[in-house]
Image (cartoon, rainbow, N blue to C red; front, side, top):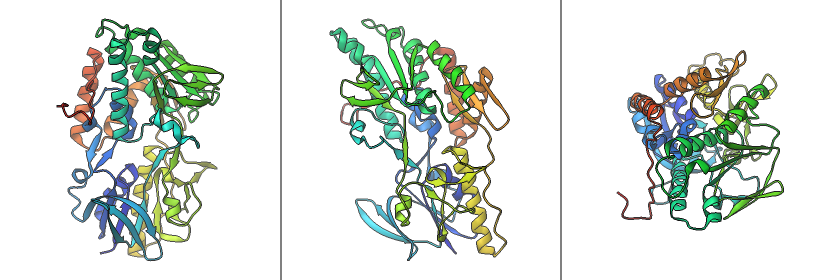
Amino acid sequence: MPHVVIVGGGFGGLAAARALKRLPVRVTLIDKTNHHLFQPLLYQVATAILMPGQIAAPIRQVLRRHRRATVLLGEVTGVDAGRRAVEVRTGEGRAERISYDFLVLATGVQHSYFGQDEYARHAPGLKTMADATMVRNRILSAFEEAEGERDEARRRAGLTFVLVGGGPTGVEMAGAIAELARLTMREDFRRIDPLKTRIVLVEAGPRLLPSFDAGLSEPAARQLRGMGVEVLTGRMVSEIGEDGCRVGEDWVASRNIIWTAGVAPSPAAEWLGLPKGKVRVRYDLSAPGRPEVFVIGDVAYYEQDGRPLPGVAQVAMQMGRHVARAIEARLLNNAPPPPFHYTDKGNMAVVGRNFAVFESRRLKFSGWMAWLVWSMIHILFLALPNMRLTVFWQWVWSYFTEQRGSRLIVDPRNSSNP
């Protein structure tokens, strides 16, 4: 059977693997982790609302009924497009070459500090489960350390959270931290008042949520301010250190800085000998000059109606299914499918409880109804039925009790952890 190799078990890669189940092909899916991560809810793990297992599904479990699919835990280090093979590092650094008839690159994005990589030491990003667990440890530890801190200046800095980047992740994180401090923790401490927690959301552009319609930015900012968040737009972060960061001309003392700004594509383009950055794909999502190689998701550059498609989950999923149709047409010598066309089903961001913003081509609204739509869609998009059930009940419990599901500080360096 023809061999299809998929690199990446995110939304795009998993959608392609599932759609290929009906075709007479062998599928090998390669990923650096053994799980498919539902990234839109990653901030809820970082803020102790959900537990890691509620938003991450083992890839083998998701594809267990796909008998011709093999899942390989490893890191792709390169592609030999001439010989049609991918170079993989597995296990304890063992190298392996895997040949393919068709290759699907769905490798996603990584943090981008815009040339200031030294910021990573003091301002972690939020892209992986390890990131979310580390940020959760940092947020919860901040309150615990403040309870035992006698120096008032250090206590204030320890209870100041700065989020760099006013996109959906920054907005959602700011709202979630505000609720954690003002609702969940308000009665849990004796030496500190969690209500005095300072949360600063910094956006270099003129408004929050720059990828949304301008009419939705102000309601989101107004909601955050009502929750006690300081919203600073038109400000650049020019310095980040252990004790704070410089926002415009001002120094903000903080020991809790979280990077929610830019991202950069994986090196998929360089593997194919193309210019660094996103791969400008053809009408069928194949790479230039390589009709057997498809590039999808955040690492693909594809214009529709004169604008590049956004890096969101539904774009990647629709691309993955389209690639399966394109491979089917190649195998059966059918007429190729029409050019890929993205159907916009809406873009959303949540701002605390009972408030979200929603936009599609025809609809734009905010408030409680948008929050309800956001909740239902995110539950339906989870990979497994048990995840949908547990997340639903966790949200119901948290909504009525104002408590979080996983307020655990887990340090892997501490052998006494349970």
